[in-house]
Length: 405
Image 1 (tube, rainbow, N blue to C red):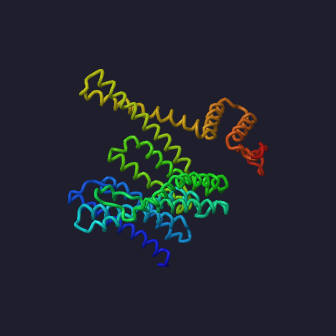
Image 2 (image 1 turned 90 degrees about the vertical axis):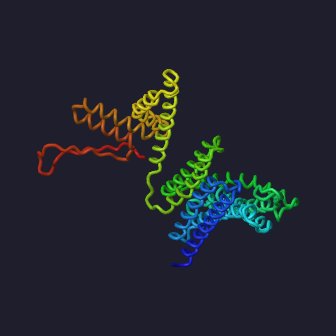
Image 3 (image 1 turned 30 degrees about the horizontal axis):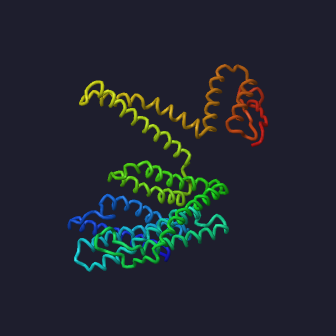
């Protein structure tokens, strides 16, 4: 194994070791009766493990297969930083509350946890700037990249020197706390604003990209959109443990789609995935709302404890499935896939008219018109096979130019 794959495996193994230490610290803290603090909550720790594993494993795979590709190293670096955050917080609280170690040890162990600022900056600014090939869109973006890195570094220093208790543990204090350097933490706000520049660079790159790169970028955008939809949709219920787990675990969609877009040579048609996601997502929401509404109405009319309301609602939703799916799919096609929708409608109309055509000339003209309207070719030819009347001819061929693309 060459040096680059060994380094990638070593980084992933380090992340795994830090996660193992975090789990051990949390388990011992629970046994010792330590109250939940930071990542000490078991659900919170588990929800962090999924995106950390996704960033580390996907980044490691890319780095092993494509050692010169910067995105792999960027992803594995983010996974390592996030594992440092979890391990630092868990071990610090464990040292301070579950052991008799000197307080200063637990306080110093909390300091590496502030690298979450660096991880956030890499994900929000540097990753969009360099997708999908690891290079900046052009040399003009080099200064923007440097400015965002500087803002991230300043914000990290400011967060690290914030005075106050460590991980919410009473009686502790940040060993590097400084009122003088405290204002540097304000750089976190312009650093977050720099994420807009990263997204802008992604849009600019998409407009200039070739067909393959565009499909890659759409897959990556799907992962980011999936996380945002789940996170924002579950934000009102963030106090529920299972909902918190779901929203944070959904962050793993981003590195997974990035890895698929980079490592898969022939990508599955993303438009099909988006189309089915829209259709079945809307269908699930519609059926769920119909089920809850019918249960409430039937229980109000019959009896609050009647099983007939649940059974009737289930049968009604089952009967509603097929017509609702057809309606929603037609609506999605008409709204987001107008070209395919129009082509389908044109072909359906042509099939209906085909039964009434009795002359070959009319059929030939109708067929060429439909082909021109649906696929818009530069040239179309129609070959009709009939009875052989000439040894050198088995039919007739007509052609017509229908306009350039």
